[in-house]
Image (cartoon, rainbow, N blue to C red; front, side, top):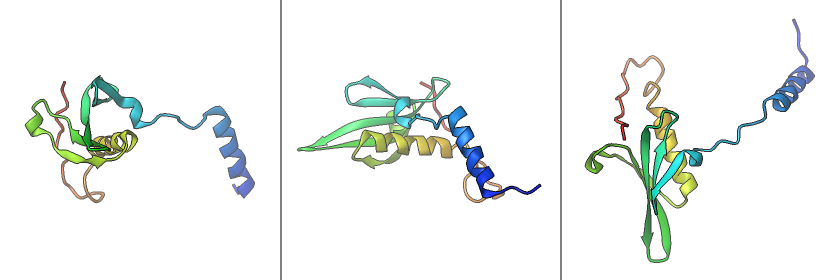
Length: 117
């Protein structure tokens, strides 16, 4: 069976009309538990990240850490200038923990995250 480039274009247009592109963003997983503190919550209602607002003079930033019951056990993910960027970073780490680290077929086992609230 041979297909033309127009077949691919027509298929893409049909898919977009039936299944519009997703409008979801990791920012929608953030729940503000108190002013300036957000928990990133997954679809099973488990916390996987913590975002805290930081102010230094006129500057505003966000500190992102992994989730752990004890604050001392949380791992720093990074510092960001926007809440949107902070949510993306926390979500990227969350997604990365669900796959094998490193190269395909590397044989390494991912560490299990502690995510209970």
